[in-house]
Image (cartoon, rainbow, N blue to C red; front, top):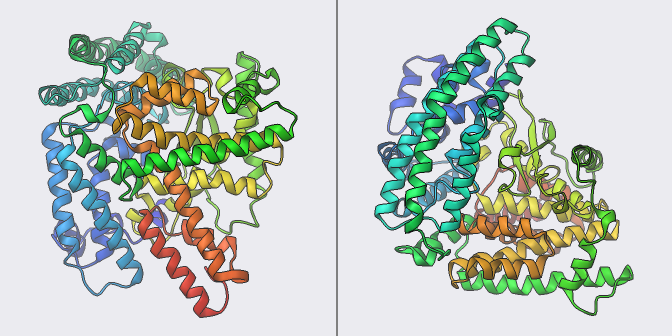
Length: 609
């Protein structure tokens, strides 16, 4: 079975096999096998999360489906137990000795991750778990629609169980929110207004039009194993449970935030929270995997903004545009050209999805000069669900299921047609799909012989840095020869440079939301709807937006270093093998990996991956 090949050598195989050795490896504080110990930590996290198990999609291949009837527990006690488990995991890592080179690298990555989790415990309440971008209120219906598979009657019955379970999950969430409120950690007023609008709209719709109902209906309709009469009975039960369990859970959350609104303010940066400046320093460290200060990142952003804008103006001038009034005027003129936009209709939006797919198919067929390794998983382009696209980002990527039952997905936001100019589509497709997120994440998942940690590590600077770097690789390979497509690439890079400025501006330099919006509007040429959504994203996700440019800069720096030291022995395919075949890693560990590749290549006298 494919899943056993994927998991091969991991703890799951031992558990399935059972026996005294497997029992020891599962329960022992220090298992005999270092690989088992590291894998066990991720398996424990996954097995403790019914929703993660559903998303990974491998237990179903073994005929195990009970987890699909449950939702994750998010109680305070559960969170405390998780932190305690990671503290013990970190202590045990120090007890392993005599590891080979790859095991030592795994240990180094595991230590970094465990230390990061442990350090974050102090600021576990310095987040806004319900906000306009993410949270249970929109994550739950999205999860049910995108992840919960319905192929037979048991799957539909599990779906109904999850419609009931949402009440418990929302009650646990409310307990968590009240702890934050007592500690003075209250989201800004605009966040509360956004989530109230979203949730009120969600419960206002008739049940038959709710995504939880329509998604189940569609899935059962596509199943050949569920008879129409059975599907009708399931839908009647779903309607009753949405009315009796789902909508009341949302009403409870609506009531809480309506009452909280008067206590919310208009200070948007972390600086205004208790220990906010310290929390922001940690956020920057976690997301960039560097020790760069907010001031350093801010200055780097300003310099990059100036450099990239200069390149854009040069290209536009070559195309005959008047750039004498500066960047903002020139980019506004470019954005006003109707030839760069699709028809604002359902047909126009369908054409956008089709064109994205064509762009991805084209580049997928032309990467032999830059890549040896390729993902086996497929990629499809889909629209972000309409109920949440107003406040969703411009696009995002969803990884494929481990067992191959679901391809990777590039979700495109089609809410504002003017937020999708044609000259920016190639770059966005390369970032989210090929050779960006889909390449990196799917390849990592498919690495054979690697611990699960190495295939699923959550290091944002690496993953987002790679995706931004991939945009540039596509240009270097000739896929953006049209000058306007190249402008689109530079505009995307400029966008990430601006993020360095506004994220640090908001959270360290005390910029207001409006000040940040004004700066981003003036320096990106983005649609105002996108700018507003982006700035509001940085407010609720401090530090995350800085990871993209910091990661890209480091990967380019390491590539340049390899080119200079290896000379004619440098092969871009080798470099990409080295970067991709080790999974996501912190940037300082990536530097060690590349340095070792350089040293090995020089020692061997020929380029080698």
